[in-house]
Image 1 (spheres, rainbow, N blue to C red):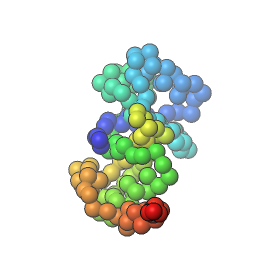
Image 2: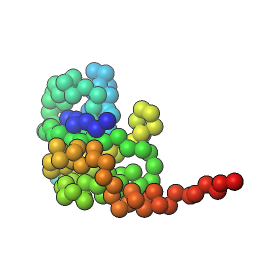
Image 3: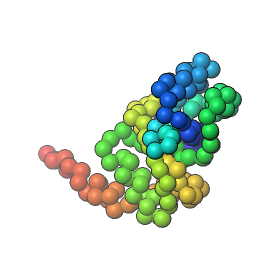
Image 4: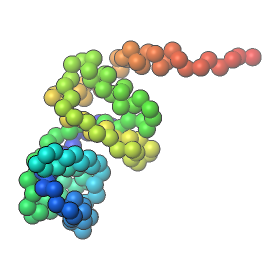
Length: 151
């Protein structure tokens, strides 16, 4: 089931050990990191986290003396297979839903991958992804399924 989740974005100076200390402090308070991405920029890195308990994580992150921003992201469970992300992106694109950025986990409970999407309109994205209308790619996949020979 899709969910709107809190994502923390931390703006980090390029100091050895800073990422490890953030992860350690979250671990000490029993906050699990469910998804994470790190990118570098010239002046700082941006760490994006989805955690198991945002309420418990918030004070931990604030005491670390790093700049923290919170954002709503759309978390979409997907099958862990080639093309699953493209299916979601094509459906959103076909309905003109802007995607600022995205990242995924390899798998979660039940063998599903989790896609984290920062979209321009969360309500519209949910409506689009919940709709049963097929995209062209969906139709092609259905047509390519091998036919079982009948005896």
